Length: 487
Image 1 (tube, rainbow, N blue to C red):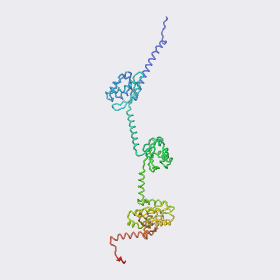
Image 2: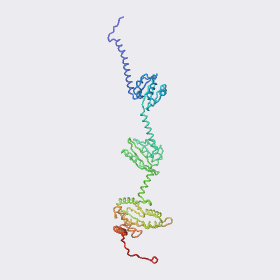
Image 3: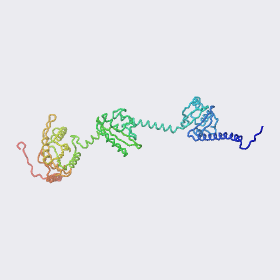
Image 4: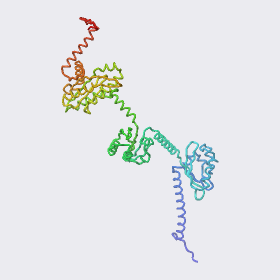
């Protein structure tokens, strides 16, 4: 048979060359794949360890070594899983014995099912272990240190517990709305204050819906929902706190305070201030009213007089200064309790004498009273009121079978003719009163300019008399001696 010569570039040579090529490519690809796998394993954020069917380690990454503080010289491929556990015990990282640790893991290994469990190390760290079986036997485990996460979760839970405890023990009702204006928090105290059920105000309720519901339930009687919502939104946009008193249908008063939150939304608190408001109103009332007769006192009279003068552009105002006649005799005869009773009845009669809601009667103390008569046409109107007061006050007073009699004297000053300010008007009304009392009882007098000089003369005489006595400036010129029997 002829022998075929093999030449360069023949088919045989090409087959030989191409036969070597695929093997090299496979080897290179496998090496590259191993490098990629190693790089991926080493760059994992978690620890990783792989074991074969004989429970010997195939591979682990650096994070696994660092996580358990293992010695890299000891923890090498081929080491038994139990020996790794024993090593962790020897270096003091494990919180149990190797046997106990192995007993925990054995069911997962034998079960050949994916599972996740936790291990707490001796230093308090918490490691989550994800166990995944391999098809060829053995398993791979992923280890994650969740200590910081668990502590944060516990802190968050503790914050929630404290928040819930604070909400439950608040004396105020509280609602919280998110940035979309929907209710996300509601404490029990809110429900108790408004005497409503949780179903009346479910989470997700808007501010508008809450106001409407309070109206529907008859808790609020008069409230403009649109105005309230608009005002609240304006305050929230401006980042300002808003507070307002709410008057409930049952007579209670709530202080409602809305406070914007930095992240959007707002918090609303509800405080029952009924008793506090009543106490404040009582204090304010006492500061401006006489405790015996409940009439305005001198302070409130001055405020009302200033107000009346500021409004008196169209019509003048009359100021009356009143003083009871023979009141001292009542006190001396029947006692001070009877005198107090009489003052209350006098106050009631004076109030009945007034014809306008703007008119004011006040008690200055003792048996001194004052009246503001607004919107009079002229002095005739003031004179009519003075005559009516003298007539009404002069009628007998009967109490417990006793009959008491008093009269009243009045001094009248007119604004603006008799003075441009409250002090001048009151002084001039007092001068007119003084003139009336000097002329008799149950009388009224209008202020006249000459009264000022007469009062000054009288006061000067009184001052001279008081000074003359200690200086022994009196001379006895005549002393009559009378026989009482014959006169």
